[in-house]
Each structure stands twice: as structure tokens, then as C-alpha cells.
Amino acid sequence: MWKPPERIKYTPINDDWPTREDAAASQLFSSVAVGSINLSQRTWVPAMVPWRSNEDGEVTADVLDWYRRFAIGKPGAIVIEATGIRDLPSGPLLRISDDRYIDGLTKLVDTIRYASDGQTKVFIQLIDFLTIRRRPDRNKYLERFLGITDNHAIALGLQGESAAAVRANLVALDDVQLQTVLSEKEWEDLAFGYRERVTDTHIDDIAQLPNRLPSLFADAARRAEQAGFDGVELHYAHAYTMASFLSASNVREDGYGGSAASRVRLPLEVYRAVREVTNRDFVVGCRFLTDEICSPGSGVQDALFFAEEFASAGMDFLSFSRGGKFDDAKQPKIGWAAYPYTGQSGYECMPSFISDDFGPYGRNIGPVAVIRQRLRSKGLDTPCVMAGGMHTFRQAETVLERGQADIVGFARQALADPDWFEKVRGGFGGQVALCRYSNYCEGLDQKHKQVTCELWDRSGLDTEEAKVSMSSDGKRRLLAPIWHRGAPMPDA
Image (tube, rainbow, N blue to C red; front, side):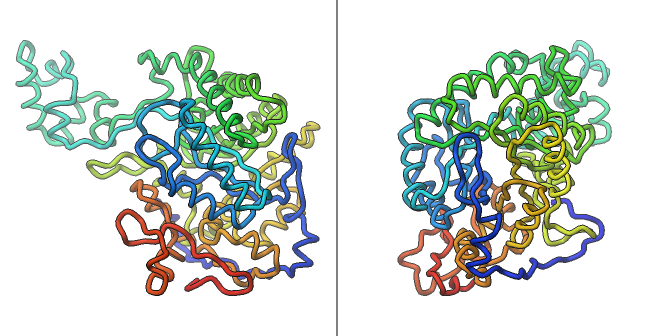
């Protein structure tokens, strides 16, 4: 992953934790309306993909255990991981692309409600993504996958020769020579792996996305409501399809690219399609970026416009992230796919303890505050969810006191200690296991391994081995140790 050149090392803030009485009087642990429902507190666990499903995208026992563990901490809301809306193989990622998934998702909702004593609201994040393939072996790509054209033969002076002869000559070139013969896209497919973009309108499926995506999202939302979720979060962030439509890099010429007004058109059409098939008391919001952190890409001015459009359209909440793009991702190893959290934009999405003068904590507070203030100045009271480097009570409470956000998301911190919410609310904040921001979890995610935390994945194995669920490689525990109120978490 990209690191700031300053490479300043930080440690988690040692917070002035509140007493139980102070927590009860705080804004963080006060209720807030989101659409037609109320969260019991202004805490939020954003969507995180733990790779606990199976190749069919089903709710497995491991999925149930994962979310049960978060629910025990009783946050105000949990957003279930990015869940695919198309019925296509996508590895161990949850899917909601067919009615056959409803029963499993219903069980997931029931599990969270039971474990949280009904205190936690449950949303599910709906995602669409385009095709991406692994970086190929050079010779295999040139000998088998590259489509040979007249342009290749002409560049090599081999007009009239067989495709096999052209391929043999391409293999013999060094990389500098080869790059002059291949097109920009062909070279990218070799160097990074094949990846579709929303601007690839010469591909019919890409050209037809505006016609197909609204109904796909709507069908997924209908299933989510049928499964008992309190609402859905439309995934308009990071490196995926809907974020790519919002991006300033979207230059489609069919009315869905170019100006900001054209780029927001499909996201609004998706929202309206979802709203049409769900009841009004079913919450519908979205997550999008305050800044793409790469060029060409959207910045805060674009986000201000999008936020006003989404809020005016009636979205029930707006959740904000930043960065996490393919555009500046590092070149993957051969046999690996490009990972959108390896460049500078990826760092801004998941900053580590090695940082710059600003540090890894709360890097998205300023942009979210600006957007929220713009909405309020327009008479729009849509709740704004801020996340990114949040791990202490004082951080979160200050954000709320200053009116910089309405709800605070804890992602990596909730992973490090799912009991954060109950510990702090009960006056046991000093027992919180603080995230180190080493991005150990992110490294597992990049490899599509079951995501765990370095703070707990070896904890208690000597004494509890018979009772601890282990990762598929047998090296790590799959769940955080259980906290017994008033007692420190083992080995934390």
C-alpha cells in the first residue's frame, strides 16, 4: 500500500473515556431518526467484507457468527457487507441476486436482532461491479489471450503472416518494444489484468447499464425488505460501477457521463427505482465519496452537488467515504487482480499508523462537515454518516457536538473490538482494545482471506482451542474473544 513520504508513526489516541453517566448524557449514545426509524444511538458499523460466504454467495454459519459477534456489542446500526445484485460467480461474497437468497438473509437479520436484544438496526449494502481479471503471465497473454489484429502485423512488418508468426514475434520483443506495438488497452490488460470500465460503451453490456441497473437494484432492495432488513445502503463509493458513473473520469456520451448533472443521473434513477418497489418506512440511503483522491476524479465540489441531489431526491441517509480507486492502484503480481486500496486513494480510504502530519485519524471529518453544512443551509436535514479513523469516544462526541456529522461509523475499530459500544456506554472504555491501524485486516482482504484482527486472532488459543472457531488455514481465530463485563478482554 502507498504510504505518505513523511512516514510519521502514530499510536492510537489514549482517550479520556467517559463514566457510565457521562456516556448516557452524550450525543453519541442518544437516539437519532433515520428516515422513518430511530437508531438507539448514533453509532454505526459500516459495511466490511469478511469473506465468510461461499462460492454461491450464501449466508453460511460463519456469516451468522460474524455478524452475531458485532451485534453483541449493540451498535446503533450494522451495515451488512457489500452484497452482489447480479447472479454471477463472485467468490465468497454475499449475494442478493435471486429470491433463493431471501431465507438465508432472513436468518441473518433475525440473528442480529436476537444478539443485540433488538437494539441494533440492520441495513444491507447493495453493490454492482464490473469484470476484472487477474494479471496474466506475459507469454500466456501473448500466445493465447491477445486478439491478433492487422495493426500488430503492420507494426512488426509481418503483413500476410499467420497469427502464430505474429505471436512468436511479439513474445520475442522486450517490454519497451512491446509497449510500442500494443494498444494502450492491450498493454494495460497485460500489465494489470483486464478490467471493464463504465466508459467501454463499445461493449453492449456496458452500454446497456443505464437500462438494466435500476431494475437489478430494485429487485435486490425488494428482497432485502422481504428478508426483514430495516433498509438498504446503495453502494455508490470506491472502485465499483455506480461510483464510476459519478466519477469525473466518466466521459460517456449517452447522457450518463460528462457533466456532474449527467453523471448523477443513473444513481438517481437507481434510487427512484428502489424507492418505487419498497414501502416508505423502509430506509434507503447511499454511500459515496467526498473525494476520489486521484486524477481525473471527483472532488469535494462534486460531492457537494451529489449530496444535494441525493438529499433533495429523498434519500434517508448519506454515508461518506473517500478514495479507494483502481485508477492509481499499484501493479499487481502475476496471478493477482488489481486491488483498489494500494495507491494514494486507497491510503485515504484506509490510512495506517504510518502517516503524514495530519495523521491517520479522522481524515474525512472536514469534507463531511462541509457537505453537511451545505445541506443544512439548503434546508435539507438528511442524516450524514461520517467514518474514517474513528476509534475513541472523545473523537466521536466532538464531531457530533460541532455538528460535523449526525452519526459516527467505526469500521476497523469495531473489528478490533466489537464490544466497543457496550464497553464505552457502560463506563468500561479503559478496557477497549484500540485498533493499531496496521491494516493487517486489509492485507487479508486483498488476498480474499477470511478477515480477522491481529489483536485477537491468536488470543486464547492455548486455553480455549476446543471452543474457538479457526480460519480455513487453521492459523487464526475467526471471531473476537467474548468480553465479560468488567473483565479485560483476553490478551488484548
